[in-house]
Image (cartoon, rainbow, N blue to C red; front, side):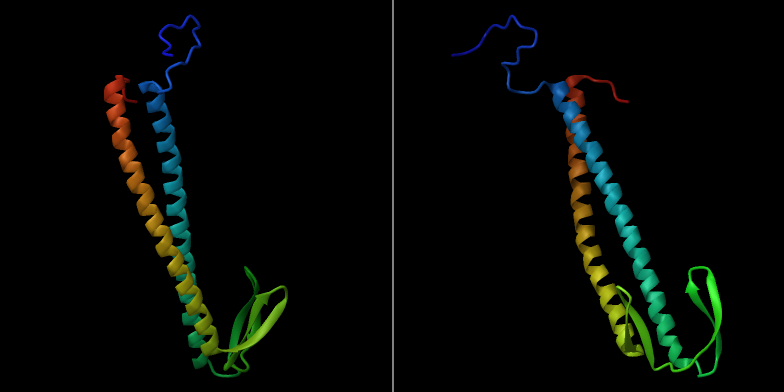
Length: 158
């Protein structure tokens, strides 16, 4: 049975949202997409920073091979605090693995561990970059849809 008359001001027999409601919904979606894009971009920047730091670490570790035993250095004991130290053995390094655990690794093994971390970050970056491309494509399509709805609804642009 078709409903053709409504006395109640709140009557919503029409299941389709109005053009204005649809426009508002699309604009909210667009704002959420913009936030997701910004978050993805920030994460990509953080990954790039981590990769750069790991690459510098790898270079520094590789350079330790050239340091002679007995060389005086300044060793960081906490960020911003150093202590004078003398280089002993340079063929192996001590790596923290978490929970207070330290393991002995060769310079080459340590460089390999860092290379693996860089590789993993690169793979994650690639996935995130593809997701960002998809989000940007969605945002662009939504932007066109919003423009079309604005033209149909005749709401002034901000």
